[in-house]
Every structure is written in structure tokens, then in C-alpha cells.
Length: 354
Image 1 (tube, rainbow, N blue to C red):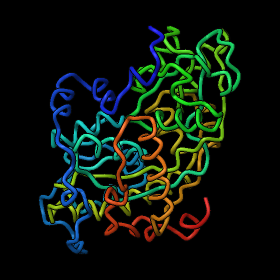
Image 2: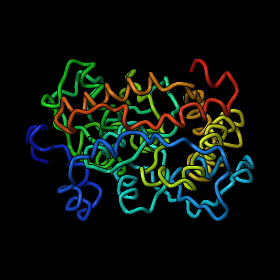
Image 3: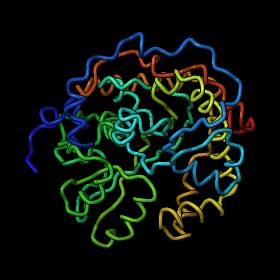
């Protein structure tokens, strides 16, 4: 991998190259978002059930499993036509553009990235995490022991995903800039292979990937490098055209409370969740599943989004400082008609604190 400085190899739309050549051509000529289209809808949100035969394609794998295990699927007042097994930000953005995904769950950065390339979408629900979600892992045999050792090293970087912001925040906290390291543009799904092959020196991994990697390569000198950098937000978001469709908007409105309740069910039914998700779906041992769950955040759904919006603005500014996206007001990414729905669906202990 050439040692070209990060800022000359990465640009605002480089993440699209990770998501497929066809998308690059389309997005490369996308016009700037129309402010009128990008601002939140002023139409009142109907409280009625969605009309019969309303359907959504929902890319939220954890909810699919939670609903099946808890019985919440019986409460859905609409049809889920498909649960695509997609979660990476660039994949979801492509799905929105292709009109093949109606609703998805991601971290806070994909909506920022979508705005930068003219894909109109809005956030309809927010969950806040107070503990770090990602941990940096080193390549086998690396001498890196802390973030201060990142200077001059090759770091796996996906600017359209949460992992990219974790990298930028960790560098900033250590007094480093993107120019002080070599950011290697990769989708996060390739971080594991890049570490194994030493294409990168370090990359942020989430669970259960981190556990699988260290279990296999720890004996060869791979290690974890932990920071207190928090990726604060998990969001539900949907294309503007979905939210401007009264029937689909009603379906999204009915899904948000169930999404929150599903997360609470998983928190309160740890053993069943470990077996259904970590063991059967993700392929880790039950012992590792227990350890992973013990490190997770208690679900927290804020009744108001002020903190979330401030965090999203800070993230957007950090991305703009690196030259990855243009500057803009992130308030327009949030459809506040949905603001209180998740919090109202759960007990007070999941609305207050973390």
C-alpha cells in the first residue's frame, strides 16, 4: 500500500468507491441537496394505523430477531416485505437510492454522508450509547500499544460508517490529524481481512468481530487498543419519499415503538438474546456472547433529541474539517415529528440515564 498522505487519497465521495462502481458514477454528478427537500416535513404525522397491504422493506437485522423471539412481530400493523441483511452505511445509502430499502438502522454518520451526495433521508428514532462500541485492533505482530502510536501507521478507514468517525475522534483526542497517519479507504467489512494480511496496522472493530479476531490472532501478537471514544448514536432513518408517503409514514410511526421495545426485550432477556443472536446468528460461543453482552450499554431512548443533534453537528464538523463532506446544519436530518415515540414506548429507566 503506498504511503500517500491521507488527505490526498481520501475525499468527500471516496466512500462510494467502496460501495460499487455504478454508484460512483451516479453519485459523482449528484447535485447539492435542495434545502426545501432536505428540511423536515411539516405535514402532521397521522396516528392512525397504516392502511391494509402497506409494506416496508426494513434493514434492521437485530429487530427481526428480537421481534421473532419476543413475539413483537405479532404487533406489527403492516407487512415487512423483506428484512435485507445489510447494515453498512454505504450499502444502506445505495438501497435508499435504488428504492429497495424503506427503513434502516445505522450510526449517526451515514445520514451525514447521504446528505453530502444528495440522497434525501431523515432520522426518525434515536438510541444513545454511553460506552465505546468499537475497539481498535492491531495487525499480528504490531508494536502499537496506544493511540499515540498511530502516527505514520496505516489505519483502516471507512468515512461513510461509524468506524470512520471513531478513527477521527480518536486521532483528535490524541492530538493527531488525518495528515499524521495513513488512512486506508476500506469498507468496514474488509477490516478483518486487512488486519490479517497486514494491509493495515490497526482498525476499529465491533463485536462479535473483535472477539473472533483476537481469539484467532491473539497468539500471533494481535491486541486490542481501547479508548474512551464513544459513537453516541444509533438511529432509525428513512428516505424522504417514504416519509412523504402517508401510508408508509404511518408504518414507520408504528415501527419505532416496537424497535425500542425490542431493544429493551433483548436487555431484559439476556440468555435468550445471546442464544438467538450471538450464538445462532453470529456464530460466537455462548461464553463470548455473555462477555460481549456484559460490555454493552443499557438501552437509552431520549425523549428529546437536542443532545443527539448537537452530537451529530459536532460529527459533521469533524468530517468537514477533514474535507470529507461540506458544512451544513444537521437539524434538517431529523424529522422531529417522530421525536418522542421511542421514549414513550419504554419504561422510565430506559428514558433517563444511560
